[in-house]
Image (cartoon, rainbow, N blue to C red; front, top):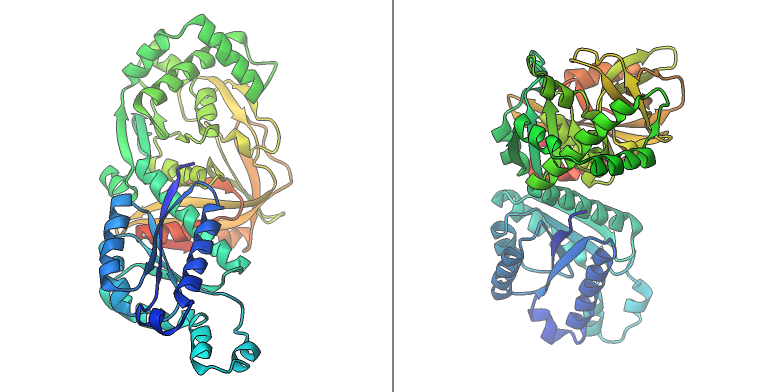
Length: 473
């Protein structure tokens, strides 16, 4: 997992410090406690500017955050603060701002304050609890300045507030991971599958993903260089990861293992974090030997969170990578059938799977024909484990990139043992209504399936990117 860099600063009014003894120290302690709790999420580096209570300190905070290359900025509104304090930071660092409207406790201790015999001290105690005071002021200015922001409200030990903060950190981690990702493209589109065609420039400028155009000839050379000892080691790895169907021939297993070693080298050579591929060729036996033996190796890569999508589905491998960065897996899928009797939708695909999502050990099975594709070889048979799932599609329309999301459940029931991934899913709307809503949102016919309900984090990531989301269920 990529370590996210999160900026943190508290804002307050410097005039108060000389008026109310101990107030600055108390608010600084709150800010330090927030930093410690953020770090407890793991894979998180906090860049802490401390108390920013003047425009001079705001300028210093700008320089600190920009030099640290932060992904997101959290602003702890510790007490009333002037909007002039925060505007220079919010408008000059170019990342989303999450305002933390976190009181020290769920409610003011009215009895304690009212029992104090010094109205000055009483005011100081109130100021330590008036985090909400500046929120409307900041929002008014941010709205006019076009600042991208959101608010988390609650108190310092509020589990719901910390759940939201954790999700923002995960969304920022996905954003950094996608910016750092190098996607390999091997081969060419499946001819005529127009819905999967995409604008590579738009993919790069939206997600920050580098796209590396790969050559089949390079993979062929790498495959020729594989030794028998390496094939033997890879075959042992197959045995650890897959349940190998006894019908699989030794020749097919060796052929897939040799290609898998070559794929590992290709990924390592180009430092790839994802890949989309498809190739048919025309009478070249060496290339056909490669493209009909890719599935096992690509499944292993996908299980290592280097997702691989078939049919040159660039948009869908982006969705799979987002799921991988969330720790949700990301299985390459398409609609297989609708079971109107059970009111479920069946999704699956031939080709690479995310074997860590399987309800049981993933099976490696022989196929006498790859439907709609050349040749024959080994394939994957598995179903996604039962429980909560999220579907994600990266949609490209005339308006640009957007996300299509649905949360549902992977449920028990009969599936097809045809040497493909396939599972049964139930959603919060009927199967009829789901397929209508999903299709009319305009995705390609593929989607990525991840385990767990992670729609809220994906929506937060979309907010960071500045793109729209459509949630079906």
